[in-house]
Image 1 (cartoon, rainbow, N blue to C red):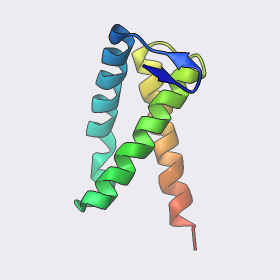
Image 2 (image 1 turned 45 degrees about the vertical axis):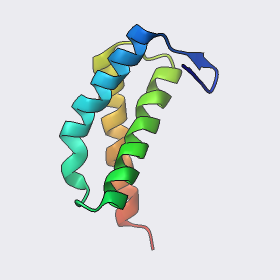
Image 3 (image 1 turned 90 degrees about the vertical axis):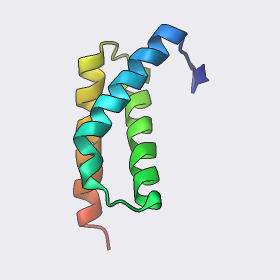
Image 4 (image 1 turned 30 degrees about the vertical axis):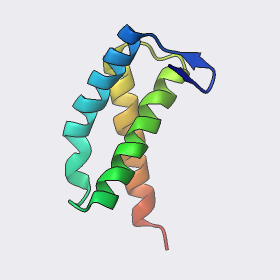
Length: 82
């Protein structure tokens, strides 16, 4: 898979899928049960995971931590949006 200049092989994709699933388990409760809310949350998380990987973070624990921090920042920012 090629994504914004990075190439991911099957093993890397499996790691990122595991990171995504583990992170989603931790932050999914921040979204209501509507399909739109869930889709927005999952897209944000996918972007956060891929962004962390693209910026050179290679191990699963670091990628997950960075992605969860980004998700928390989005939640915080959305509370103050008009």
